[in-house]
Length: 437
Image (cartoon, rainbow, N blue to C red):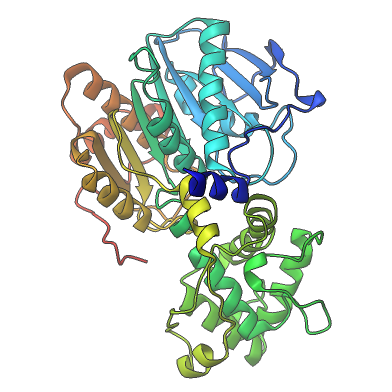
């Protein structure tokens, strides 16, 4: 027990003993103007939890009795703002148009912390039940990093102290389901590979620091500055024929070795800059949770030179343990769970689904998991009828006890195409392998 407490104190991830700031007093829900994407007659409200998380709630006029509690992605590193949840409400407005009530919040603070965010998400459920009445059904939905948050919330808060269920089912879309210790390694690799070819993050004239730190303590880097450095090295925005030979070589090698796409290169580098700084400095006591000591990089023009010259770093076991406690998943699910993921997701690899399926299988809970894949190369929002189809499939599962197959979801999806004017792109036969990149 003493060792566990030492890890938690070292990590600073539990929130125990942290006083609520004066600015984070609870704000009761007040009427708010709904985004234009919601159907006429929808009632929207906004408020703030006692711990500081801003939330929005939307009830359509023809509510079907089911509440969707949403966990957003990121993590966002800035200070939470009142209207931050509106972006997610707008993105998943098809759920409200279909008759579902929707609730989503920021978390109490910006930055990393899966257990913190899971607690804030379940607090939102309780707020909505207390303020608006308990619905007939409550569905937990996590998107992207919010998939990690929702999966953790389902493990921790699915069952109340009296044995009743807080949620009826779970939906995880484009989810970062490999957990913290596996979900960010490729971005640490990206920092190392990028620096080998570009030598400008940091520049030779700047203070040196281990790349796994993201940035030195107290430093900041606007995204525009980072994008300018990428442009300088790779000519990313230029047409192939106008790049210099050095730019073309650097870009080709970085993308080939890391598997990152050109249009997400700056975004992934930004996460491995500002988010790594937050994770390492603010959450892990300055210790390193990443390792590339045994990694052999392949796909470059000269793999030997890359592997000999790339910066190497070893993980601190305490940091790995703290990150695992906070964000890794056990697979001990107790609720029917449906996942949706694009095969060519450029932000969270579909490999996460294979890892999650194995984790759930090792826990003996595969009968509670149904996974669905699409042929898209998207992350933040997939085709609208697919979200409605997995909601309908989960509802049917809860009504009948029959776990839906991907083919079942595909058939349901076709029924939503006309009113959403978007295509169904479900691939019923696809199953990711653990070695899929």
